[in-house]
Amino acid sequence: MSDGALTLGAVLARLEEQEREIAAQSEATRGRIAELTAQLVEFDRVAEEVRITRKTLLALPDPSAPTPPAAKLPDHPAYRQIMAVFAAADAPLRARAVCEAIDLEIAPNNVNNVRLKLKRLVERRILVELRQGLFTQPRP
Image 1 (tube, rainbow, N blue to C red):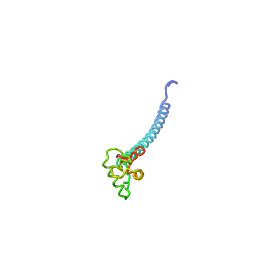
Image 2 (image 1 turned 135 degrees about the vertical axis):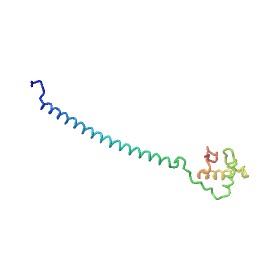
Image 3 (image 1 turned 45 degrees about the vertical axis):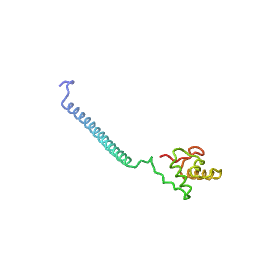
Image 4 (image 1 turned 30 degrees about the horizontal axis):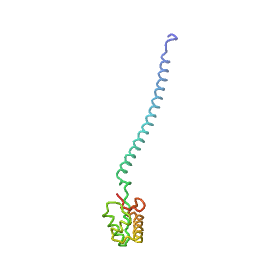
């Protein structure tokens, strides 16, 4: 054999070297596949948690519409009369108009007393004061 020709031993050594390289690359690829498989399993787990959370949140009642406890009307009969006036009214009212509606004499003392009662009803959130002195029932 000449110097340029490969000997059987050299070919076998070269094949063995190639085999080791391929085995190393194969092992590295298997490691990477195991890594990616673990990542995929984790992504699937997190996605399932998100699906469960979404399903749970959709099953909850709407938090934007809490129903406040009903305000208690004071016991005095004048408050029931005032509320009856507002139930029949189709527009906001002033204290003077409420006095007229419940047949009270239009005297400063009576108007001021009704105004104070209206303010108490506003504090209890039974009525709303749109602007100073103008009262109405809250709209849902």
